[in-house]
Length: 232
Image 1 (cartoon, rainbow, N blue to C red):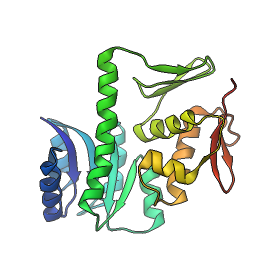
Image 2 (cartoon, rainbow, N blue to C red):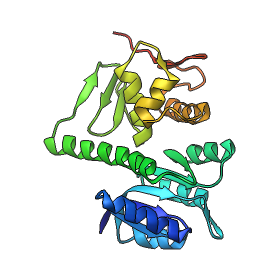
Image 3 (tube, rainbow, N blue to C red):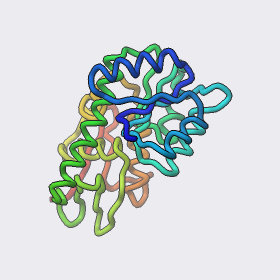
Image 4 (cartoon, rainbow, N blue to C red):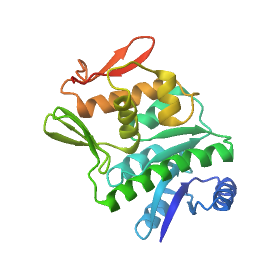
């Protein structure tokens, strides 16, 4: 079967409450509480978004995230009572797309999940239309249908959050985009730490820059934000 959301959390009562709330708004959910249950579930089912706790009994959500990233490009939103910036940075560095601290507000969590579902639906619609949706020039172009970027003849596949971040910079190319604007347009929330953005920018540079330490495309404007420089 296919579900919009898979909740992987050993707080069973919280998972059930979240599931019931999501399904009130027609977001289908399934719940598992261990790594083994998660892998068994995914052997027979699919989901559009993973909500993943860090502490899973004797197992680690971090380790599960790494394992999931070997096979799935599905958005992973960490949900955890762990509050430290170090935990947030580890989660994002190993492939997480977002980090929501417990206790979370159900309406806010649902809004974050719906952002990913809307992006997925838009991708499916573009794919069904059979249009490549490529915009740009021969040096740098974005392909909306495949969530990839073409740089000087090379095609680079990106994860959902990386592509959303690059798309935002591309929409404002050759102009400075503030950190606050990136948080608002990419995450839908201005209350994130600079570390969250820095991690995603670094991951993006590692994929599109020849030398991430001396970026050609994405330049840092210290104290302000970033600029995607593309020759016209």
